[in-house]
Amino acid sequence: MGEGVFLITGASRGIGLATAQLAAEAGYRLVLTARDIGELAERAARLGGPDRVWVASCDVRAWEQLAALVGRVEEEWGRLDVVFANAGTSVVTSFTSSQGAPPSQWSDMVLTNVCGPAFTARAALPALIRSGGHLVLTGSAAGRGVRPGNLYAATKWAVTGLAQAIRAECVGTGVRVTLVQPGLTDTGGIPASRLGDPKLAPADVARAVLYAVSQPSTVDVNEILVRPAGQDAYR
Image (cartoon, rainbow, N blue to C red):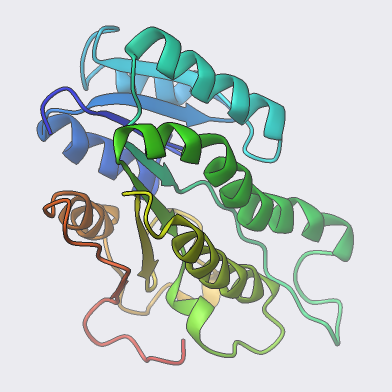
């Protein structure tokens, strides 16, 4: 792993921040992004100096920002080895009632959760092809089954398909593609109705990410489904 460069979107908290901590311990140089880097800058400073950790403001809904960032990373650090398309958001939805967020708030979630990883992949894959690198995407256990009225789950279904489409196009390039599908994870945004359910810690998911990227270059861990012990498979 040595001097490899590891880029993480949505790195200011939760799974992204936990993965950054483990990646730093593994010897990676880090590029950490978020829409608002105020809190991220303070947390990133604990992971290493500016020669090891680079914090960048980046909105994954904006293709131009992602493309420019990847270009700067290659120009200044010479390579890009792992990209973790992790940024995501969630709102409660219903298609039959006024419960949850109004439809006017849905588009941000769809753009972040679907266009975000798609734009991240498109920006990063030329660099990852050059390095024989690894693309990791955060899906969800919710992207494997039906959740009544749940648009968030539908966006994660889209990420499942996106990972498969990217992997198919990357055959023969040397790039590995991993979809991580966490169950309920304590990232600070759990709906009130599920606060009593079993939960993963962000570090549990981060260990799954590092497991995938630490495999030999001949091994491609396609998917990792990880739930907390005791979680209902349909929740």
